[in-house]
Structures are given as structure tokens and as C-alpha cells.
Image 1 (tube, rainbow, N blue to C red):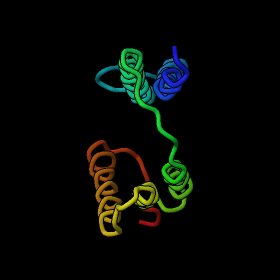
Image 2 (image 1 turned 60 degrees about the horizontal axis):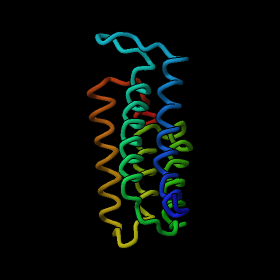
Image 3 (image 1 turned 90 degrees about the vertical axis):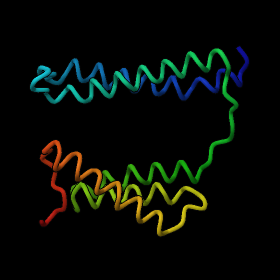
Length: 148
């Protein structure tokens, strides 16, 4: 296999390893519950399994026809890392909804040409979606906005 073809396998292999780690970690350490009453390990198991399946599909497709590799964009990497870090940092202080909005806004800042009004609208829309799905719909015990 050519070196460029091997480099294009790194992403799917990392995704496969992460998916398997989540799935196996959920099975080994968390309660899976039942279909009627899912335990704390059901969601990580499902997400890890889905990530593993999608990574395996990508790996097989990439073996058949290797993707073209390009240079990494450091601004995009900083945007994604900044979004994840800001969510982890601000959630305990502000609550899930403001932290989500800040994280989406920080990640969107790495996209060239993505105008400020659209960044703000996306951040507010994703935070509203998190509130509708997780807080209202599923009744997750999140602190939506600290102090309220």
C-alpha cells in the first residue's frame, strides 16, 4: 500500500478505535438496563456501536478507492478544540444551554466566510434544539441555565 493511501486510513481507524472504546467501556462499566428502561450505559453503547459501524464502512470504502489527502487546517483544528474546550469549561458555570451556544459559536468561528449573524443564529438554534430534545423531550436532569 502506498504511503498516501495509508495516511488516508488514519481518520477511520481513529474513529473505529474511539467507537469501540466507548462501546466496550459502556458494556464493561455501566448498567445497560432493558429496552423499556435503558440504563446509563445504553446511550454510550449505541453511539459507540454506530460510530464503529460508520468507521468500518469508511475504512472499507477507503481501501477500495483511497481518498485524496490534503494539509491540515490549523484554524479549523483550533476552532473544533476551542468549541469542545469551551463547552467543558462553561457548562459547570453557566449551564448546558449557554455552554452549547458558546461552543457552537466558537466552532463556527473557524469556518471562513461564515458571517456573524449566521453564527449567532446557529448557536441559538442549536441551544434551542438541545433544550427541546434533551431537557423537555427526554427530561434529562441538566442544569439548563445556572441560576434559573
